[in-house]
Image (cartoon, rainbow, N blue to C red; front, top):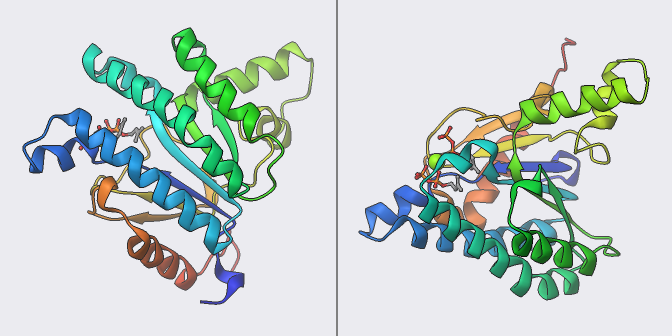
Length: 228
Ligand code: IPE
Ligand code: IPE
Ligand code: MG
């Protein structure tokens, strides 16, 4: 594949952890654990491939509605991820970034996240963004409110610059695993001209070869942006 057809920004809706566990007769929590392990594998692979931005949807504003046990288990996994993975991320030059409203998270979760962000802040390789307590509608409302507060003019440009993603290009490719074909409130504004790739593969099974399939498919797409 030519490098010119490599997406600069890949975004992933990591879905199917629960079904992955169910298929094996395991509790959903173990599906989330396997999903977290897959995050490590895919981040490494994208970094190696030379992708500049990888954004993953890990916890939506709507996911707070899940049973308390499951939300608690996800929070513990997040703490573990930020505590245990950031040294390796740093070694690989990966800069961590978080989008969403994590003020809803418990202080110990926020603290682990902040430590991870601080540790990798000077890295200049892959920018790895995790969407946490993220919802695109809330993001747009927040952006418009801050534009009004600052007395700026409302334009496409100022809206873009007030989103959580103000310092990144729009996603070129959005992947969703597990067979669902919807955005579930992810990057609504930024996805205006993204290419979509849907696969039935469940997130914990989405390995390097699955990522290659998505990248190959992307390379074949004809992006016209409304032109001819
Ligand atoms: C995605 O897997 C992870 C989160 C939304 C946190 P799910 O937990 O949604 O898995 P399914 O969709 O129930 O299989
Ligand atoms: C979307 O998955 C959110 C994440 C992957 C974090 P969900 O499983 O929560 O979405 P729906 O409920 O199928 O739309
Ligand atoms: Mg799901």
